[in-house]
Image (cartoon, rainbow, N blue to C red; front, top):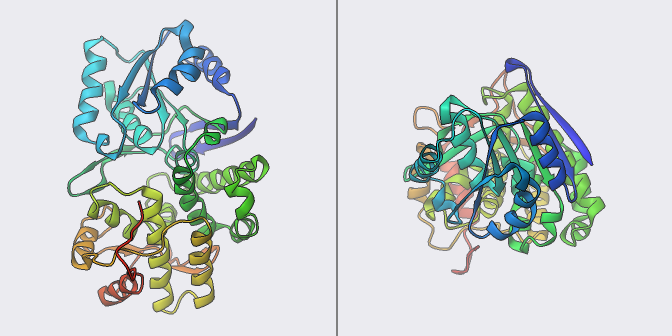
Length: 373
């Protein structure tokens, strides 16, 4: 089993991310040792309920865990669902002696992490991500949130877990579109922070798509290490952590535009291509490097164009209230070359002329009406 330790120095918080196979027993052992005599709550979604019962719940059975299962999908990541989970805990008289375990993808992790951060002013949280996206991104770093009609992740907290257990066995049965959904975030962090990882993915994309365990362990471990390095330096996104938003200003706007019915990684993939083109248009990123990013995303069957009839004015309007915006002016991570982003003192995101943003979007409008799912 691989172990990566995250140390948040500001609050003297330390936790491990454990990567391996068949690690349900390890989760039960961790809970017994670290949270002896506490009540256990596991939150999952309806699609994962049976898998959760066969794995985590079975291992935790002697501890009599409470299972809360919610509807599957981004629509559950809401203030209303947060309230329903909290009411369920309160009705059953759960209090500060409670540990919450998330079992699922980013929606479950973000929503339940938000619950843990505010319930009785904060109770212990353990993440068990079941998707590639959650393993390498949303379960690491402590971001929790819900969506609103105004935008994605606009209400939430930064709340670090006690541990993250990434069981690679869950990837064996992960649908292909969910698997490549996670690759968008891995390609993102490679593009901003590690040229060698980017090149490894370019050379081994076939093995990764075939879910070769050795290749997967390498890219997952390295992606987590890179995010760990960023989060340790800047937990609250006051500086360096902004680089994790590469592709996300456009990507989050697309998610909102489509009422969160399009996959996060698919929207981020398009965001990566368009924001790479923005960097190219302002003279920071070469044509060749921008094309390499587009080609790599294409090689993983990730979308790189927006639909033919996209409402660019609406996209621009949504970006004005993006949480990264300042004075209603959207900000972008500017890639200078693969593995290096633009920075000025503690600033890692920058305003870009609206006409350049529009042009970049227009360059990636599909020729037909087919669109990503």
